[in-house]
Image 1 (tube, rainbow, N blue to C red):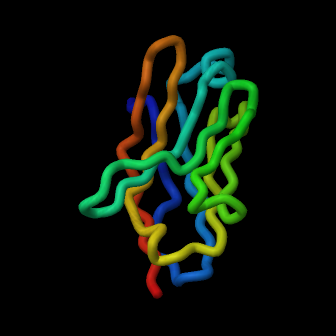
Image 2: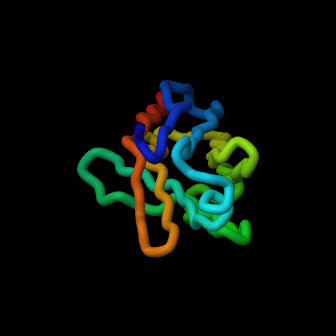
Length: 118
């Protein structure tokens, strides 16, 4: 069973919305609440970049390109992190990756494709 399971990607028109999910089926509650978690994305021919992060104390940080449009959150009971993406633009098209960091261990999800058509 993978450590991280992503879902929610797809094809959407510009201006639309998607919500990505990152489940952590192998994490116990104390591990999940202690994680720093993030979403990265990688567009074709470009480097992977940080989109948003949420720390174990729920502090958040966003890339300038998504501020005001994307919201990162997590649900401890469901052991799942989310990325609500609104007002999507064609330049948001990329593979989105979930990332977690806990006590020196870093894990990555398999990636989920987001495509925004103009």
